[in-house]
Amino acid sequence: MTYSVKTQAFEGPLDLLLHLIKKNEIDIYDIPIADITRQYLEYLEIMKTLNLDVAGEFLVVAATLLHIKSRMLLPVPEEPQQEEEDPRADLVRQLLEYQNIKEAAFSLDKREILERDVFVRKAFPEEVDVEERDVDLEGLTLFGLIEAFKKVIAELPEETAHEVFAERVSISDKISLILETLNTEDNVSFYDLLKGARSRQDVIVTFLAILELMKLKMIKAHQAQACGPIWVYKAVNEETG
Image (cartoon, rainbow, N blue to C red; front, top):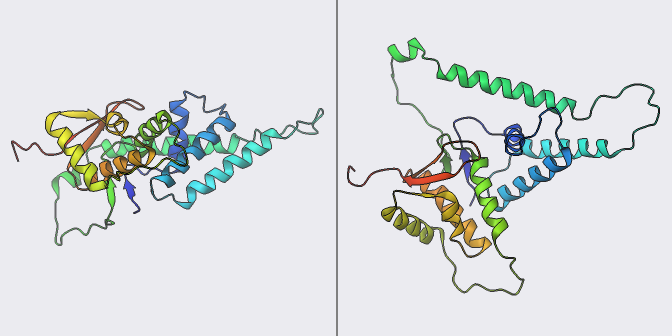
């Protein structure tokens, strides 16, 4: 089962790097490459664990980070013939340029376009190309969800190789449990939904169940601020239909 996760703004490898820089409160001009590379690779592993589609460009940036890391480990000549550019400089330029483009795009998107508001003409129904298991996160970042998943996985006790779980919970079972929870609670934190799982496999199934419910537009998630708590609630109030 592979999920293609869509967000309002495209999220690629540079978005992941900016997310890590912001989360760690790092100076973009002085990126600790070793730490950022380790965290970046951890995210890729989690995305693969969750069967999320990891595009080739994520792997290209991973290779770039490893290359920069290896260059920074090389001994510096005592008397260099010419001053060498910081190996991170090109990456920093890319990140700054990308960040500026994203901010400009966000600003333009917020502007009211008169033609769009006044002249509405649809001769044919719009064709929407949506894959079978696309999930619209509606403004919530994919990396915010993965951050919550990563936190729960880190808190799980280490599983031994001989440990066997007799009960196997399916995604449909988890969907029922999540909806039952939201029938008694107006909202519940994304972290608490995952924390209730008993094993790594259980956490993964719970995460996929949440994505499935989002795909079906039965639940929504909201994050008030970057790296803040994520709240999950029912998409439709049953009383109002």
